[in-house]
Length: 286
Length: 93
Image (cartoon, rainbow over all chains, first blue to last red; front, side, top):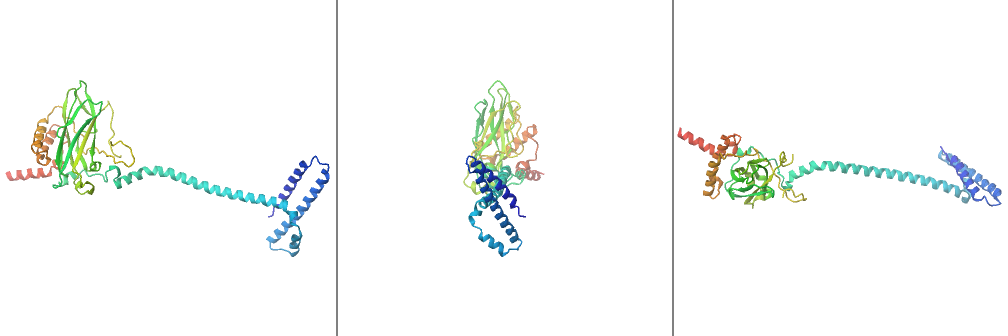
């Protein structure tokens, strides 16, 4: 449906009002008014005829007389109001276009934002899997098999020296030291080592220890069957105890090319003082 | 050292012991076995392979005095020692 005549009437009214206020001080006001309205009536007539012809054209009923009529009309007459209308229409179209484009862009940005949030949540298990697969950061490549102690065979031609180190935290008053400086063993064979701890104070002291293995990559082959770490150990005043460590080195240590030049492993224990009721979390990923 | 949270630095991943922690030997019940073991180590230039019998005896002492959970020695890596003792027993009989 052609709905232009409605717009035309609106344009006519606004321009009339504009002219009225602008020329309010001029003596020729009535004459001008009449002239303006006349001009606008002519323009309206011309535009409506043009529109009817356009509508007819749309329906495929173009007549030659109509075309002749259009050609005779000077362009200047129609330029002003027609320019304003098409300009406004173009502006409207452009605005619509912009709005549509803005909407799609906003949708993309929102999707990217949601994607980022999802990625940050997914990153934790994905990174864990990646670390396990690549062994990055010394993570055990696979959970080690505790039943292998029964079936493992010692690798006789590879002798490894295990050195022992003992430390205490600065505020920890125990005397803590290893009872042997080193032990020579082979992968696949269990061995026993002793540390000694003494409480020289007059009060019972509760200690809790943690350990470290250097080089870090060898740490994944160092398996402790039983030791004294990660649990509270209480020493009464002036008491001295032997603390054993029962361990072995995984026979796969010999197969690892990264361990080919490793001959010495340093096992280091550090004792801290534990407060009443404090619990060390068991290490490793849960 | 293992708490240095730098990206890319190798850290040490601690693992808890397989069978937990030894209870403390407050009364020194197995001290003699320990001394035997330490003497053996010193005599053999700290070679652990030559002192496996003493290791087994120390662990046996602990098990007898409730300082260690009782377990068959095959599971503690002494399968070869058990087989040897079985053969000796059979030979005696």
